[in-house]
Image (tube, rainbow, N blue to C red; front, side, top):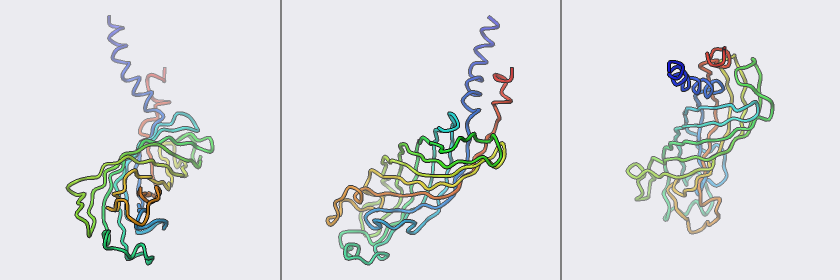
Length: 229
């Protein structure tokens, strides 16, 4: 009975050790910008600050699973574009300012064999992709739609490219440029504009670009009692 009780108590601890010994947590800081009906193709248009948290579980030296929670500001204005389409403002807001709360789960593929916090200056480039869910919180000028009182939840398709390297045995850092394909047309408070009907522009995009630092709190591969015996 004592052995059974001991094993029962040890099991959750062993599971925690196993699930965390290859995991990192970190912070992200950078910029975010919008692309959509107002801004169809200009990258880094009106970049605004963004911050976030991330958790990464490393299956092996090529594959990882990552969860993000980012917060950012987005904005756009017709006056920044001179085309006839963008000058037609009587059916659209003059500009908008909004914030977005963005959560994603993504798989990462490392092009080079990479073990986080294993060897100083070990590095790799990577690509990522997955699924996300976001909330638009803001307001558009010239429209009755008010997202402050009525947040706009929507699914997203996140994907990106990045670079990461080990600074020490516990700290890693990197840079990433990622995109969110939004399956909503209300990021810029415009829905189905009459002069533009393509799927690409009727669904808005936004992007994050910045740096991140991750920290490995415990070196479980060495220190965890379940593995040290």
